[in-house]
Length: 626
Image 1 (spheres, one colour):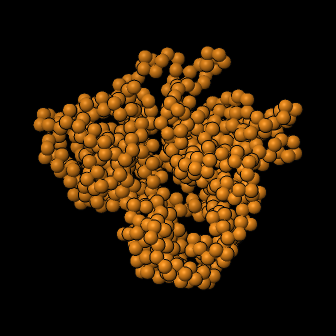
Image 2 (cartoon, one colour):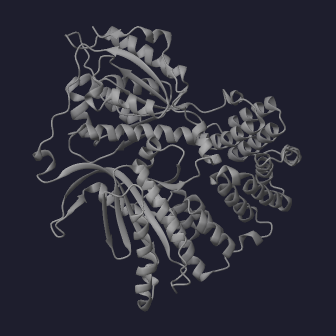
Image 3 (tube, one colour):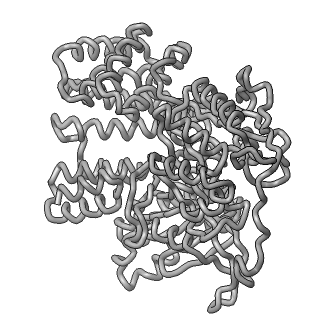
């Protein structure tokens, strides 16, 4: 059964791993591995409050000489410090540092030692930080590591110690050597860079010291559609060659890394091909299934584009289809797909501790009032305060507009809308004794409903059943705030006073996508229908009790709507339904606006007042399509 737990954890099915840990602990309550893994599931899923409670109940802080168990307590303190408001940070950072230092004194491990040193610096105790850094550096220099990952972390520890001691040159050498030990482990490098950036900021060292060692910048790309050929309105081979050269220059200028966008005929495919030539990771985000997309956005513009599109799809790292529509019938669908692609680029930048960038091939004469397409994407990105490269490309003939939607497209009496949906359930409610059901309704459900009634941004749709609630909002940010408030409201309920089981907890699942709004035949009132509603409902059971679990679409759109107020940490791909492919899921948590983690997020992106619109000299002349 341990193998099942380990496999579930690795593939991101934290709810299954956690539930199995609890089941096994009923049989073996003193099993230290099971206790540690149960708490780790909670930490990874963002349920930090419950993780702290179980850590204490399981007495993992008394696991003598078990570095994993002891360091987990310090990790919880560190997570709390990073999320708290600035005024409370120094005290919490010092508590985390002391926890790490205590583990270091017991085990001598360089992981707790270097974390203690860094947290003391962030707490304002530089002398103590330097003393610990010297010890860790001295003890980590001995011996060699044969495992690439172990060798990386040993070198990264030395880099962090050097920086704490003010030796930036030694830091760069150690970090470069560590990266060479495990060159494909970009996540480990990004994690190190996040911590090193915080240290550099605390020491007043310029961030330029990390140039040359950071991963490539995640890119969102988009461009105009056009046919190839020599006929009027088509783009010649010479013009295509010039445009490809411009694209290559743009990608090189921004040190482009993983890229996110569609592969429509024209500029999309040219950019995707350029990314693949660089050996980059191409992440294709489509508004509809592949076959539908090719028929609507590739084939009509010439058969040569079809093979090139299929080649890009075959080489892509992943293909994301944001809806199951059988045809593209609205600009809203295109905008949804673009927002997901932009949000994924921004989220990847946060993970990689770098800045995202947008590369566009855009017709300067395009109509900004069109409401969708490249010009719309440019505005969304710029309003978020993020860096852009715009390559002007004048077309003699515009691509066709989307057809007008009719009742036949969407169904009489139905209205297509975009909704952020929350499904809320009380885990363990089946254990409530029959005589306590009224108390459960009054104490728990009524408290949650009261919280919904007090929301500043009210849901546009509500429903309930048994011990669950269904809420829908027009945007993801209000939905995220509502989910956070409901989780906090539940945590404040005194279950013991109401004679309810202490095993009760709240589970919240969130999703964002296009749905159909129409009349419920039974209740005779407007309700929401569609596959996206079903997906939202199936995400909720995947949430670990005490946590908020959201889809990739929800997390990505939220990243574009509200940067810094929330964090979405990737959990993994999870099977939410046997009829659906595994879905990437994220743990959502709110953070204080002036918290350190919010600052880290804002440092990983541009700002509206300083966002850079890059125009390489060669871009100054508009490329004319003959």
